[in-house]
Image (cartoon, rainbow, N blue to C red; front, side, top):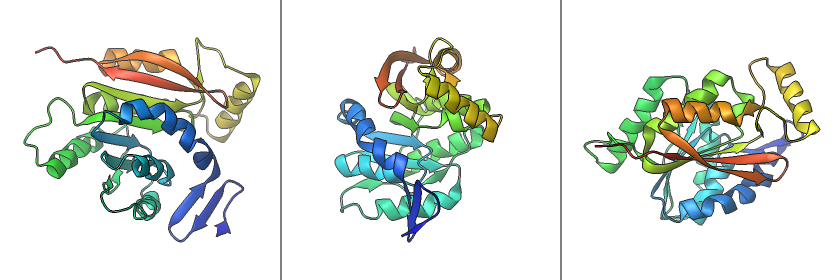
Length: 232
């Protein structure tokens, strides 16, 4: 392995991110009750592929669809998932710019083709997950993720977001406030987002309701949204 940073290593096509490796099991334990009753999962921002590989390894009966904005990471995602035993089902990664409606439409089209479904008018996925996206993306991207999740989820499905967030406009710790300053110093469009702002987009623009906020290690939260049933 050749190190490209203190937390990033590369072996062949595989990119290894130390923070991703540390939190993969913590996140999986929280996802288990949802994955136990799920058929189709979409991951927004699959990054190196470490998470989706870890989740799929534990749930071979679930179909996982990775997505990523940075298409140069596709080779890493595919290298990880190629290590799965036969019978596991991780589809090829799809490019996703969360601000582009045509990308979300393409996800539905790919899902329809993969399953041989004639129509996916009421959503394509049972579960959408994202980890550590909101604070290293613009608000346009973050709100786009929420709208897109609402668009592709089946009624009653869940969108789960993990990461650093503010609650009631306040940082959970002083270190998170310093983290926010560091992020904004790197890119003024980045920063720790307010849970209430995300909730407003979910409720007003994505037909989702915030059903639970879970405290997580390292001053993080897990936000659990559920898609509201569409009235006939």
